[in-house]
Length: 167
Image 1 (cartoon, rainbow, N blue to C red):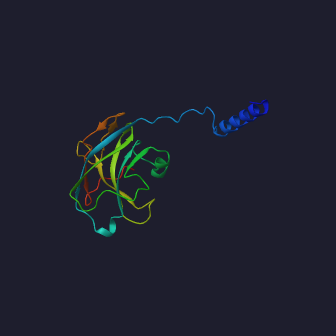
Image 2: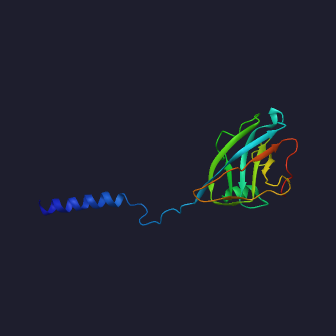
Image 3: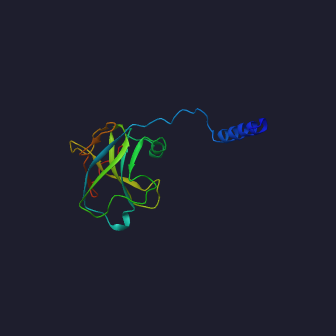
């Protein structure tokens, strides 16, 4: 090979490899430890269909949640089905099983939330909460362990007698 061909080959190799390097030795994204929560939701006294727009499980890392949109933006809540998902918990059933992955940690307030109107930021109410002692004024803590399933996070929803709001 001539000297010119060797230089051209080196220039081509440098151009190919330099074009593939966009961020150099950037640190890897942190791994967020996750676990799994599952349970059964029992429903009573369903409201009229026109007041059922959405129904989701929400697990809060802070209790009481002071500013729910901020908690969502900061990632301090887990929502199932996730926001943006067009599905929701089923309507007009006696019960439903659920299970979903979420960040490992403590969740002192796990609820079922009903959206009853078109305002996605304001038209929500709590219709059930996880509570081991059945005193609806104090929710029970849920601890999610990394790579493990927390079973029996069962929630009773009575649309005629919802738990009091936490704030």
